[in-house]
Image (tube, rainbow, N blue to C red; front, side, top):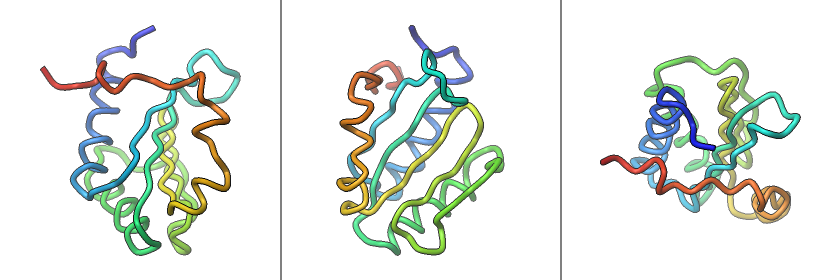
Length: 118
């Protein structure tokens, strides 16, 4: 199932912001047919706590809407920005490896090729 046009634009916008701040290992997980109250997880990591905070703050500043909820910006180990249909997780590498959402939801991988600008 492909995201609708608005979801695609929202995801592309978030991915562009993360890429511009040099976020690493960017991945989108499609959660639409799961019981979670969100459609997509966006996962990325920074190189250190300051970088994690910088990515999250850049998203807050440049993304078109304010998050419904946010957590973890003060520590910089795992920042979560909840935009309802899209939940953004920015980790430092160690925390990402420890919680391993990538493997936990490996069957939910969403091809970023579907979001490439044409």
